[in-house]
Length: 293
Ligand SMILES: NC(=O)c1ccc[n+]([C@@H]2O[C@H](COP(=O)([O-])OP(=O)(O)OC[C@H]3O[C@@H](n4cnc5c(N)ncnc54)[C@H](OP(=O)(O)O)[C@@H]3O)[C@@H](O)[C@H]2O)c1
Image (cartoon, rainbow, N blue to C red; front, side, top):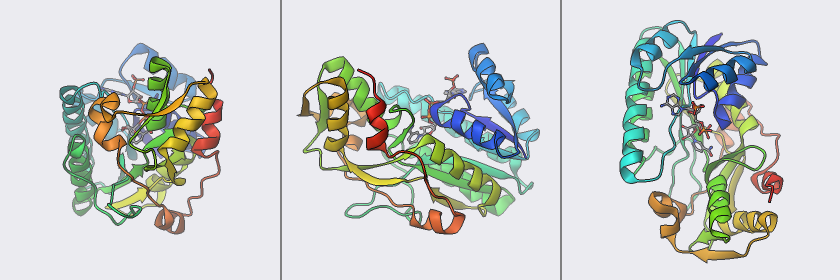
């Protein structure tokens, strides 16, 4: 397939581009800068210049493709307003890509997070949250899944809190960044809350499988580790950076404080059984050993 990919220069998107090219697909990648265009071309993809707000570019990319994988997101969690702007821009982009595919039966793979379910690990059958600071992302993905009834083979790959590669990425990557800045490897609360994780190279395989195989309107969990206690994550980070490992106030994490405090394990049993997906790359705690002091 010729696949239009947004976010193809990111931690996950670069793995997805490589996975697609390595499995006989061609890739047209959205690139919002010269640097991004050079990066995707060096990876073997063709660049389409434009950003998420360039709705004509998105329409043009989707029109040329046999399928679309959307991964671009600004990831600006610095304030509630900044996050709301990012969510609004992405929601308009998802709606535009989806409308372009209506009536074509072409695949449209969107991305979201694994849901949080009090008292147990979440499964693929649990609904996405549609309220809270990132609720708009859930609503946009639900709307895309709803296009299944209008001739789009839309699917959602739900990612765990940390998608990592070489010790970097996701919530664990944010803990590392804060530890470097504050000289404490902190965790909120008692640190017993669990976060799920996956290696980016394993997640990339699931994006390809969803593109190739998944029925319209379905959701999948790219979960390799069902849940690591946050204090165990902080302990590896502290060990690598030679910093003390301590509880810190939730405010340390700004808008993400309440989300960081929650026990939110997740499973991928259905995904593994139905799509034959099997993670093979290092676990989060193993991969964090790659952090350089
Ligand atoms: N990493 C995780 O642990 C994790 C966990 C759950 C969900 N996710 C989600 O997975 C997706 C990919 O995450 P990631 O970790 O790969 O992110 P990332 O490394 O920060 O990459 C973000 C990608 O989006 C592109 N992008 C950002 N804003 C854009 C805009 N306005 N227009 C066009 N492109 C734009 C970036 O392009 P440039 O190269 O031009 O900056 C880059 O390719 C995001 O939706 C993220 O929220 C990630």
